[in-house]
Image 1 (cartoon, rainbow, N blue to C red):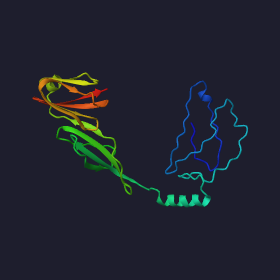
Image 2 (tube, rainbow, N blue to C red; image 1 turned 180 degrees about the vertical axis):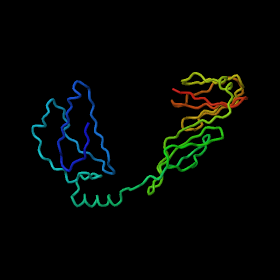
Image 3 (cartoon, helix red, strand yellow; image 1 turned 60 degrees about the vertical axis):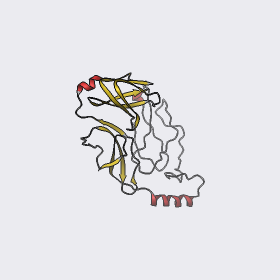
Image 4 (cartoon, one colour; image 1 turned 30 degrees about the horizontal axis):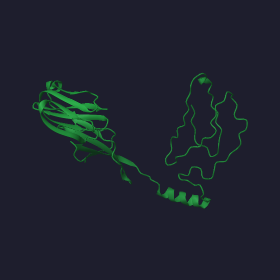
Length: 239
C-alpha cells in the first residue's frame, strides 16, 4: 500500500483508502532493509473520512538519540556518543559460511555428518534405524550457533508388506494403553519420542501386547516392533 524510507524528521503521510470502502481492513507496519537498526518511528495513526490532512501538523524535529541501538534515557550527549562509538567498533559483522549437519542413530550421541553451504541436504543411508538430525549455522567470526530443532527419520528397508499389514497398533490416537497385535510373535517393542529418544523398551513373547503409555507426554511417537518375521515401525499419537 505504501513504502518509504525513515526520514530525518517527523513527516505526515496520507494514504487514500477509498478503494477499500465497505471492507474490513487490517493495517500492519513492516520494518525492512535494516542491519542493526531496530527502530521505526510511527505516531498518531488515524483513519478519517476526509481527504485532507490533520488540521494542525507542527514541525517536529527528530530526537537527538534517534536510531541508537541501546537505551539512552538519562545519558548525556557525550555519554551517548561514547557508547555508540564503542558499539559501532565492536558490533557484529558476522558472515554466514554455511551449515553443519549432525546425525544420531537410535538414541546415540549426535555426531557431525557434513558441512554444506546449501539449505537442503540429502543423506544416503544403508542401515535401518531411527535417525535424528539437527543443523547449526556456522559464522566466520562468531563460530557455531545452537543446534536447530531435531528432525527424526525412521529408515526401513526390505520390509515384507505382509508383515506391515499383519501388525497393528490401536487405538490411534491413544491415551493410557496402546495394544500391539500381530500375526507373528512379537519379541520386543521400543518407543521413541519425536527427539529420537527411547522412552519405553519392553520385551515379550506373544502375538499381542499392551503397552502402558499413561506416563508419556502428549505427542507423536514411533513404535519399533521386533517380530519373528522382521522389524517394522509405526507412528502413533498420544493425547
